Length: 427
Image (cartoon, helix red, strand yellow):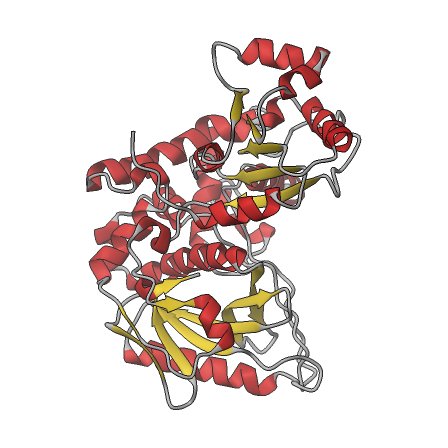
């Protein structure tokens, strides 16, 4: 058995358990939810255990409270197989009136919510886990702390050892825990195995609606071609049905929307919400979500791309690298009790990522694979956006950063823009 690699989610889970009766950990299959929860659990119920699955589900239907007996915190893995457990846990938390009683894990939103009568507010808190960041997997040395940038970024120093070939490999490998530390071929095959499981099984199992595997593949390919854009569902529909004509487009849009909704429910797709700051001008802000996968390896696998393919097509690699950075920023932001947004206005002034903390502090981030020209473009964009923010109505940005793939050092420019390689960043 592999040695457990510490996750940023460990401390988030401990914090939530200390202030909640139960914690629900959601996230993509294979991202490590059960393994992380097992580190703190004192007893475990595996709902999906083949030897006990049928009995577990039947018992959950007859007497769900029976399944809750055990030393606490008690882990209930894949709880969504028996949605009645939700209300039973909520009731048990009320009855015991103690924090830290249960940890629930689930790789899908329950298909049938009719059996859940209470939201769990005040009793069950939620957290989202993603595949591993580069810092968690050991590829980032963590010499630059995102948390520190919010408090003091006058002097930023750090190093980076990742080169273009390594970045390309890390995009294709993804952050799946099982792939960390394995040889290259096995690591890449695991990303393919995940993709195959999604299109052939998971997307239909979510709500027991049989969905076409080939259509799912086409949708994921189209989504991959739309990475880091605000592509409309209608555009994705036209791409998916490019060889079938555009007749009956309305019904086709509904079909594609249902597939995308299912992919979101199993945490394959995770779009980025639009950021809406107070501006000095009356510029209209685009409110469309930006398209991303929960892990960049899903996109490269959908397109059939390997590391060499990315290096031969740096434009595509730049977009997939952006998805990798968004994944890591989301993980780091979660540890800081923050969120990651995207900004774009009608004049196409765009900021790839805005990390916004609960206290109102925020940082502006442009993501560039590397090269002096692209870095300069990113810095120009950040300075232009900062100048347009009305600081009489909101805080000024805590920092402006160009997050790069390659480059030996992290440093602060004379204009205040930070240049930070992803291989040096941590929470």
